[in-house]
Picture 1 (cartoon, rainbow, N blue to C red):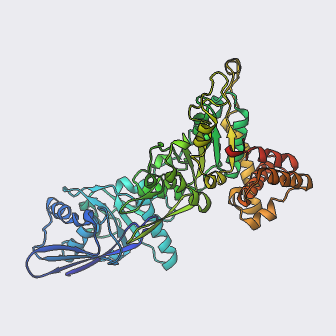
Picture 2 (picture 1 turned 90 degrees about the vertical axis):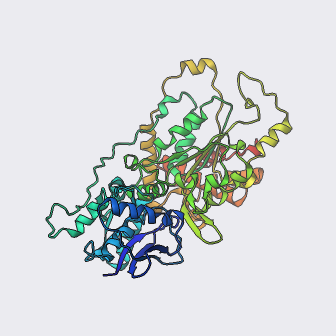
Picture 3 (picture 1 turned 60 degrees about the vertical axis):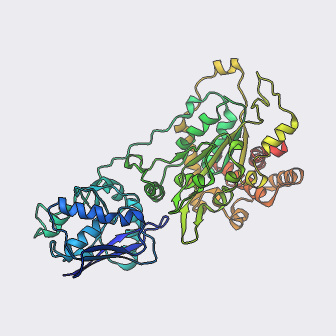
Length: 509
């Protein structure tokens, strides 16, 4: 047999299209050629595969070796193709049985000794393999490095055979009989997810209004801007916010883990733990939304189904902040390059924090602000109107008096707040099968209609505050969440009033 055909997978954003690895041996001057748009990492696999085969005591064929990675127009990167290339050479040269290879998919980077090293994106590839099974009705077994086994096995219905080395994989195909000790066996994940250990809201003294606002935000999935002097607890509140969010569903956890897997940063121990990303204000636009020659997810995608915390919001470059506008609306980001396009999910919950002025002490109790009105206006103007319009709730976090701070008892625990949030979230799922912040215009008219008194108050607020249509709809969605927390089917005047209070933008103060 001078031709061997195996299956593997590439990565293109969140997608993992199938790649056919064809290995052909021909007579002629010895050479080793890889075609099919390989990146540098794939081209370098020639040397890794040669050394791995020789150190595993196999013969490296002195022939003209051609490896084709199809489809030819799909870029191939990373060392995940080392294992299928090495197995293809062994099968084509007759050193390993080639029967049954079409029942498997392979991925793994080889060390020079023939050991298998972990790869990036194993969970995304397994997820794509399961999807293709459902579409074509054909199930395949995935052979990959043992260090990726727990991660890949999180995908339900996926059959994972982990291996430690090239020799183990070869022994699997050389063994006769299903009961042979040399055969690889299906991996059973040893993960026993514990309850996520989040920081607790009881650590934050006072700030009852801010806590109430974050409870509303967690229940409805709304974005929040916290404004207040330094040291008032804005960062503490944001760090504890993931602990009151509704528990992740299996599908949400899988989506989040698949994005983390693309960067090699997923840990199976963090299964069903909502991600919390807090990039520094010096982050670039590419770091925030993703990019690069081979597109990788940025902070907004790594925060998918979790929290993105932007501290010192005005200190971010304005161009960096403006890239958040589309993802906040659509929940995804498309990165376009001349030769390729990659889509990444970005359904994150934005929590931002800022000082009210350049010195930070506007409105502080014990420090005097020395900023002029023009300086305050310019500082707050670093956040554009369109971006501010997309932030549902803007909350003032005031400083506590010293006596109040010393006398404050421990606050309400995250567990009690999370219980109320969970009940509200469940009511939303039963009513509309989605969170309130995802409601469309038609659904807002259907589910968020206030009573007469509430409608009169809302009309007055719209006239006085000159709201846009987006602001009007966002206030209605926040009011719907407040009513859900109160277990009230109809949005009343009190719910509208509280939602309006949370909509007092910086420009209106």
